Image 1: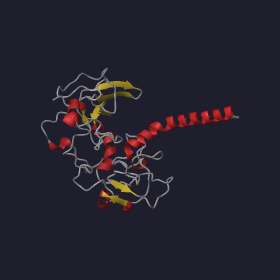
Image 2: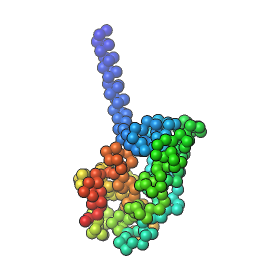
Image 3: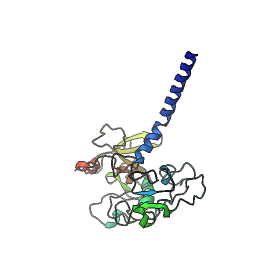
Image 4: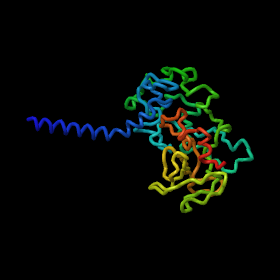
Length: 279
């Protein structure tokens, strides 16, 4: 009886270990957002804007069912609006020697929150099994967003960029002035010597590019590197081909908690800038 009881306890301990192992990746991902400003639910401890209608964390951006299939990010739970943006190339600066694509790719997903045009509870699929949840409304917001109809913040703050992006780092811009393309093994050699060459690798979905940071210089992609996003070029060099572009998420990772502005790497010493720019 004792032996059998011990065996049962052992099996129970092993089962708990297996279940913990299965859920650790998910738990780690949630933990990375929980104590950041991207936790917009009522469980948020340091969120810029708290919402009293739900303790869910992921729902403000993602949904397991019925997301926007046109989004370049998984299971996106917000409406995308690519119209009306002004981009950096419209300033007419003489130092810009790369082509800028219309707002799209992963950047349009970021801007569906950060252009300030939608309330933060304006999601496609509300919590509650597709039911219209009457408590899920702008009126339940508190904190910074309450006075501006659920936006992340008032106008003219960096978290509420608006649709005039002429004073922001260009997104949708060809990396290093263009010239890198899927059609060249390993990517075309560096064209613009003012930029550090990107690393690249062929995965099941095609060639991917990134720029190795000083924190992670071993030519394999890490979340601490600056990620480049593949788009089919419509302007400049290599039109019609997949090539690497700089997007919002090249510098920012919305899921990290080690940096208050969600930067992929520590900005001390202009490390973010100097990862790409060879100065």
